[in-house]
Length: 218
Ligand code: ADP
Ligand code: ADP
Ligand code: ZN
Image (cartoon, rainbow, N blue to C red; front, top):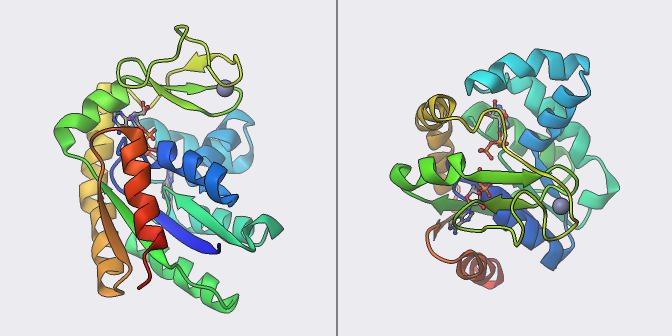
């Protein structure tokens, strides 16, 4: 099946967690601008050096940088039969640039899945988030704990806490989300491709609601 999907929602709503499961299921790549930027920061590339200060303070990296990342990535052959955008677009300017880029390739976004979780729950999810350094699998110290503390169930890699998952930075990110990213939901609603999903409850149940939306004939 061919799906061009955007996953929307506030930091901590479960975009990465769901994207990884959808990737496995539908054999289409997860494209996370956050992951690509963190890799650039780690490798100290010119882009990473520029992005670091924005990311550390919880602000958005500039639109031109992330739009460039996505334009390059979507040209890769593995995007031919679909892709899952995770954490992009985060501004209306990015959403418009994405539409133009896809249009040039004769493609479009088919589903903008908006995962809805209250602010009150997001803080706890983000402070407890742990990520595998080797394979990128996502855990939570309470809600989705690994079998062995600090060790990835999937690959045995080391789990780490992201620098920006500290309370003060999380607060900034949630505010940035309300101001700059929430309008993207309206953008897709107007295009009639917004699919709201309740983001609380079991991870597998949420995956099931997303799959139901993807299978539904419009
Ligand atoms: P989360 O999964 O918690 O929402 P991400 O990994 O998506 O966080 O993003 C981490 C940081 O990377 C953001 O706070 C922001 O600084 C930067 N970033 C990621 N994607 C974008 C984007 N599309 N536009 C601007 N900045 C971005
Ligand atoms: P995002 O990519 O949207 O920032 P993540 O997928 O990284 O969100 O999830 C944030 C944290 O919440 C992770 O620690 C993850 O294990 C946890 N999490 C994801 N889905 C759920 C859920 N349905 N219930 C409880 N915790 C969850
Ligand atoms: Zn791992």
